[in-house]
Length: 262
Ligand code: PGA
Image (cartoon, rainbow, N blue to C red):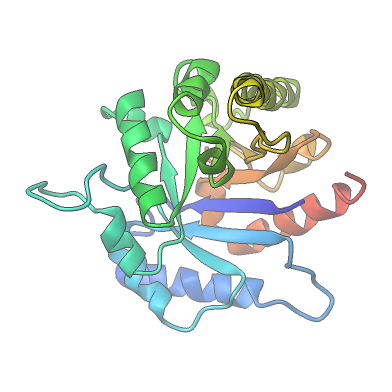
């Protein structure tokens, strides 16, 4: 199993110099030692766009660059927007789409779908957040619009709005239920399509997508262990705690150890 730790820096730190120092810290903590195994783990750092270019400087291979957003068009007269193409040019490999803090500022399901399409067009992995209002409906809106192959190229993040930016993470039982339901929804959605194909053009039984599903919302070093026993949880989206890379490292290594049996 592959694990993802999405480090959403949000609108921090406050200056280029501080961002450079933070990235230097990340490099220090995530340069693998002989004892550590980072092969199945990805640390995806999502800074504000003005800090993208810092990632051109020397960086350890365990750290991937992500964006917190992209616009839904590739180019044009769109003041203040960042296209997937521009992000890609800076080395962005992942993008958070549909974060609650952006849905609160106008991102609808339609825009979320368009942004996912833009990301896929430029081979950027979309990290699709659900949980702003109704995570099942939001998930279904994505599933309805994309093929099995496309869904396989995505990562889903269950991010219940009441847990984001507070100090109240969701109950692990609720996270477990959400992960299970999202998996089931994907299965049901693509089993139907598979059925149609089998009796029509012929189908491939292995065509049910299995995207990674993460949890996000007030995860920190003190509480992350509560989530470790959740089956099929493939990591976390971490906001404020991601400003402390030594804690992220501990979380990432701890996560792996307790999931070895899965
Ligand atoms: P938080 O943010 O960890 O600060 O709650 C989570 C997120 O941005 O998804």
